[in-house]
Image (cartoon, rainbow, N blue to C red; front, side):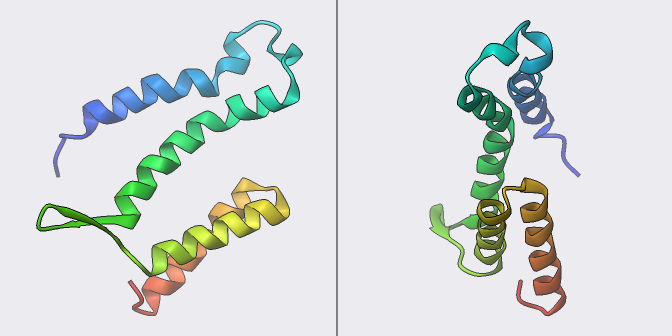
Length: 109
């Protein structure tokens, strides 16, 4: 086990936490337009999802990056489809985890 990524995790916390907590830290934030509030609430998860997506969907071989095709794309697609359809991030994430668990149990990944 390596501790090389601990500073990165601390930096991610320092950057994303204030955006997530801006509603508690800023007075009268409820006066902002609804689209602005929705945007601010989704900044933290979007940054973390982007970092995770690069780690999962992009591989490196011989110092050359390449896209992996398979189970991760299926899980992300299921998540996106359910979030758009049901307007609920939790349901989408639960579906993505279920796709990954079932796929790995069947030997797809």
